[in-house]
Every structure is written in structure tokens, then in C-alpha cells.
Length: 316
Image: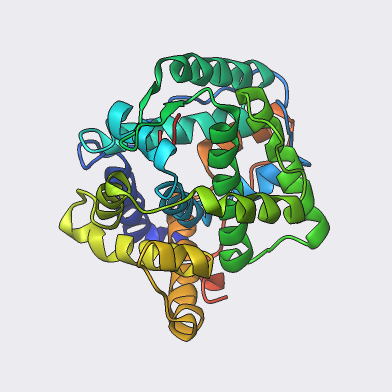
């Protein structure tokens, strides 16, 4: 009875979210990949990757990763010269989401096809940055940089916002599992645990700066072309993403967060918002398809009563 009473509200929330992801043009989210046939893929139901990427905290982690990526001049040159993020931001968003879905929840064939497609696209992304340095999306160092910012961000968001944070051992497992994707894309010296992940990010700081391309991308990320009804929710996501950035990155981006406000107000509000969204959307269709392939029952649906408790701007 309670479920049917709240169904109109639930459907409206889900519909609004899907309209945001499609730029407001369609009532339903276009899911490019859902398959019920095949193997468990690279990771499978016992993986930490399934656990992390089945959680909506990745929404915040994704934006945090994009903010970090703006600081690399060569990565941003590739975005500025080859990306359609300003003219087609929602198309890029869905393509990037599709890549993660295929590699994490897809079959082995899905994952291999997704990586082959991205590597093919990378071959065309090359040029000269405004400072005169050449760049190429096939550069193993840049591939690893994008990977590290994403994994560090997804992990930070999960640990801060999920109701089921990872143990230290599982956090290391997550980093190791996700390294498989980076290596297959052509990355090198890919971190295999949390300590090496943080060390890699710290060592790359000397390469980072806020250039003109980065400032334009930053303005876009903080004020994307969203319908008015969606802007307060996006502002909360952005505030949470900024609060999860390392202090040095906040300072480099001129986006300081107030720690007390972030921990006492922004994060609790974000957890509640993710709880409402999870209740409205139910289990992600890609995870449900993967569970069916593995012979597992449907994923548990978040309970309404428990609510109290990022093709992005990379080189893909």
C-alpha cells in the first residue's frame, strides 16, 4: 500500500533525473548496453568494482574526477580541440557512462569492444597544446592520469557518501581491479592499491596548472546547460564534489570548501538526496542484467525509510 501511494512521486523523481541525463529531450534514459546473455565479464558479482559502481555516489565522484582533469594542460588541450562537450554535453555523458557500464558490468565481449572503440578514437586525438607542447590521447601517461583521477574520485565519493563504505582491503582491491581497464587502454605504471594511487596523484601535481582551457571547462562544469528545476540538485552535487577534492586541488582551482560546512551540511544532504534518487530509480538496469547473467536474484531495492542514514571531459 505504501509503495503504491508513493509511486507517482517516485516516478516523477526518476523521470526528472532521466530528463537531465538526456538534456531534457526524452522522458526515458537511453541505455545503449543491456544484455542478458554471456559471461560475467572482467569482474563479476564478487568484485568490488560492481559494488562501487552500483552505488549512486559515483555521480559525485564523476564530477570530482572532471574537476581534477581540468588541471592537466595536455589533457585539457585534447578536450578543447577534439571534444563536443559544450555543444553535446549529454551525449558525451552517456557515452562515458556506457564505457564504464560495458567494462564493469558487461560481458568480456562487451568490455573488449568498448576498449577497442576508445583506443580507435584515441588514435585521432592528437595536436599541439597552447603552450606549444604536442599531445596525443594514446600517451600512456595521460591515459593513466585520467584513470587515476577517476578511480581516486569514485573511491573518495563512495567512502564519504555511501552507507556501506569499503574496508581498507576492499579499497585496495577496487584500485587493483580498475587497473585492468587502464592497462587495456594503454596506460603504464598503473597503481594497484590505494597507497600507490595517492602517491601517483601526488607526484603528478608538478604537471598541473589552471590554464585558459581549464578555466573555460571549469565554468562549464559549474554552470552546465541544465533546466531550472535541476540546478539546485546539481549545485548540491557540485558542492559535494568540491568538498571531496584534496585541499591542493581546491586551491589550484580557486574553489575552496569550508570543511565544517562540507561535513556537517553538504555531505548529509548529499547522502539523503542519493537515497531519494536510489529509491526512485531502483537498481541500475545494467547491474540487473549482469546479475541475471550470473544467475543471481534482483538487487535489493533501497528502502524509503532508510534515507536518513564525473563521454566525460576526459580523452575518451
